[in-house]
Image (cartoon, rainbow, N blue to C red; front, side, top):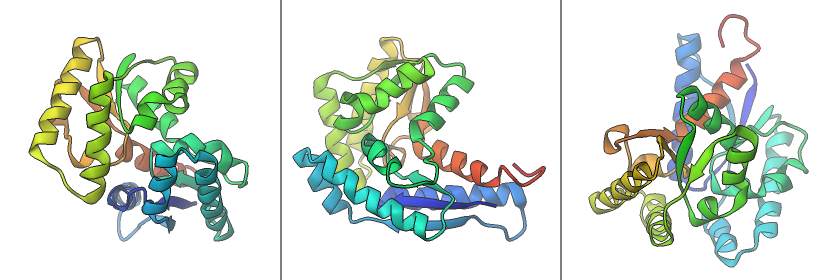
Length: 236
């Protein structure tokens, strides 16, 4: 079994879900007392969020690249960034390490296509919904049509993530807003919706949506676990 390097803490609320999901997946496959081999480097999200807010993406990239190098030095076999948004600096990170990065958008796109969905809505931080690093990868490399909410709804989604979900709060009023936004994307033609922030699954469950929801936290974590098991004959 390979060792997974988790670059987490963005926020720690969703990093705990990564740890749980990876270990559960490994145990489902191997049984008994088996669990995953994981090395976790958890950053202080306060520092990362301040750089996001200031638009200092290069500095944020250097910060995470330094953390990634520590994971590699600790003998991690791959790198998993436990957040959608900070894949915007993936190129900085990849340039500094020799281990493979398991990209969250690639794992998510595979799950979307396996479900037969070709047009998908995208929820996440403003950075994820508005910048090209995520949407563009889904469209250009995976052939998906991607819809995002209107500007006022993007602001609602973003604010709920930072002011509530990253602080462990899942409020009914916010769930209703997300339901409304998802329904609007469905009316525009979305066959499913990507929960493109690793905290959104704390708020939204499959029963909260009229269309399929693609939980990037679970998808990415399970994909990492299966990658780690891939060399075990008959178990992956």
